[in-house]
Length: 130
Image (cartoon, rainbow, N blue to C red; front, side, top):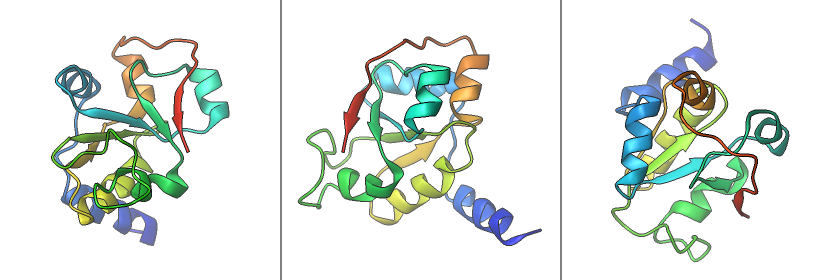
């Protein structure tokens, strides 16, 4: 196995990953959906209803409840579900958030899995948090 494969395996070992349907239901129950896809990916695939768009480069600062740079929705105890295009980069992102004490996980197969499950997307605009 290559090193990135080891990193991914290690990140996922600490997560209870969700199916797209489970993530959809969790969001209805108050979990934060966080979309880390690029603007180009969102333009091609569509926007996730109710998701907050946060660039991967500032993810930890925006979601750590103890950070002075957090978004208002990042309250202690609020579950966070990270999505990327295919469910790869979201796993290390969720693991990083967990290391900060955030109740975070990600979605199996990412937004592509969401689409395959027939869950809703829309044309936008996204709720972007920088």
